Length: 385
Image 1: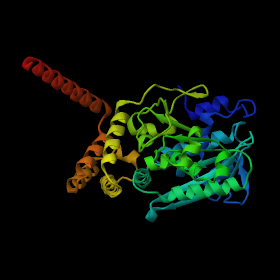
Image 2: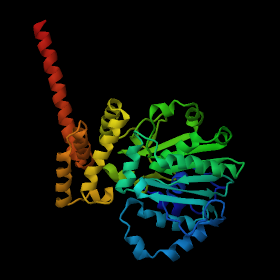
Image 3: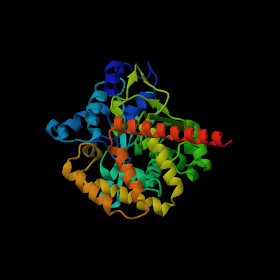
Image 4: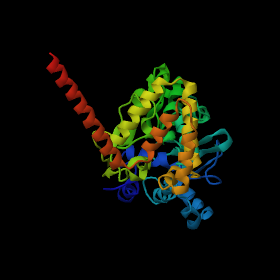
């Protein structure tokens, strides 16, 4: 099995002219926006820099000791930048139009960068959610509101499109994938026609009203959605595009890390269906969201994340290893929730942290019991007849 970095080591010597752009390349460039390019890549209409030079500058500004302090799942991004900068395939690609807007008080995380690849097309990469609590909350906020990053994405893409006449590719991982689709649908008609493809890597879907709009339908055939077996974020809300499901070297929510996605040569290693934990999450969330109005969804999301925040952890990677003190704090916060969404919050928190095998065993037992009850009921009916 291999991953993104293995792919670059194996295929990096082949320029796009010899081996055309593919979905793995799209994931690489979608993840490139996770790199902090502050003071490296020029802003809107302020010039450009090659990936090779941007990498050199990045490692001049950031020491290995500093980078080692990053415990989030996106800590692979600098290594990926270095690998891209050493590949004939991408080292000469230009980075431009960098923007980075993060404001905790507004619960905003928006960043994007444009990449001019050697095949003459531009790739617009929208930064996804890291695994900070605020980042994941913004994903869930999509269930009841238009988040600020969505409007920023539309404005940013339109600005980029105005500067060029050729076709572009758009993509992102996690929330970045959602923003890529949202921006494409929100672009002006002439710009939408010049979009070659839109890549949504394990990003949330959309409310039904959005999917039924004329703008959305006009780009639907261009959307490529790819999720891992245990996808959670990628199954939020509704998706009109049948996703490609890929295998991962991780389990549970840790499969959201794109570096864990497995490859076979220059293709993703696929499987036919999502796993039990992903299906349970999807079934549960879909049912609940259908039952709640937007205000109830807001209360539910706020209360859910108040439990996560009570742990004292900054990101979900830390939550998977939360200690006794943090666990007690989360349990205490759950007990305080008295609203109608309280039981839903408790169920979902358990779903996030319960051991997969335990979950699998409990669900199998539950379904066996359901089957026994149905058989018993059928037998009683036959006796009466």
